[in-house]
Length: 337
Ligand code: ADE
Ligand code: ZN
Image 1 (cartoon, rainbow, N blue to C red):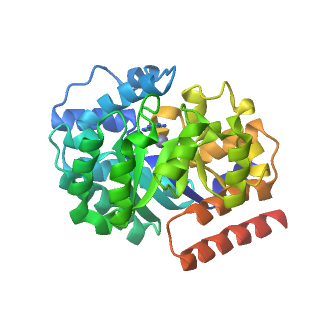
Image 2 (cartoon, helix red, strand yellow):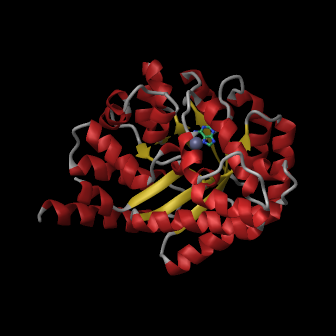
């Protein structure tokens, strides 16, 4: 199983680039940029990653991003993630970034996007990994702040395919961002949003109806509303599920309790993703392995996670067909060995 999963072509649709900052790179950048961090060693940083809920993670995560200052830092961060993609056979990735985490510290939008984009271009050419960028609004900040960020993004629209919504879900429901999402949709950005991670199933409904999202990030609390589950299955509305994240942030007590396999078998377009792999203990292969270790699954079911992700991705139908045949060929080949 380990071998099958390791070599299975994968597509990632829920990955925060700031969440790929490994402690070693954090130390390197802190030294390079003369930023103080409240830890002595990378091991000490890892030991601090004990979370009780989403907020306890976000507090430490936003602090970690302070070491990112120059374009080269954003390049190095993104390139390190793309090398992990290569090792995990990730053939396509759709990456979130949080501009407000950086612009609030006086870092220019341009610095962030140019550093990330340069690494994505290099990976396209040298590693054959395709990618898209999705800009997230921080839901703990005001809608006016999000609108300001949206305006800053307009000159870079050729580099950004969509807008998303992340950060603290409790107390910041989708309706708070209805106006900025309408502006973004009208300008041609594809909308997605985190919903039903810690917040109730009604947030998923609201993300669909008030924000017009084309994918739901997380969405695992949909099971609290059976009618919604049926609707998600019938419409094949994608859920970008993050198994290791959900355990680390205590959305589920353990992987056996996680509902991703049940949702897959009910015909929902669920996908496996790593969310913030440097903080949650694993990249794509680790997430697939954790699910397969806890649930008895066939090779075809595991491959279906990638087929779902291809279906749910924001690439051309030609690219989707090419990637789907790569996965099917892999499945046929390994199952006849
Ligand atoms: N930002 C980074 N990871 C997140 C998550 N899992 N939920 C909400 N906001 C996030
Ligand atoms: Zn997320």
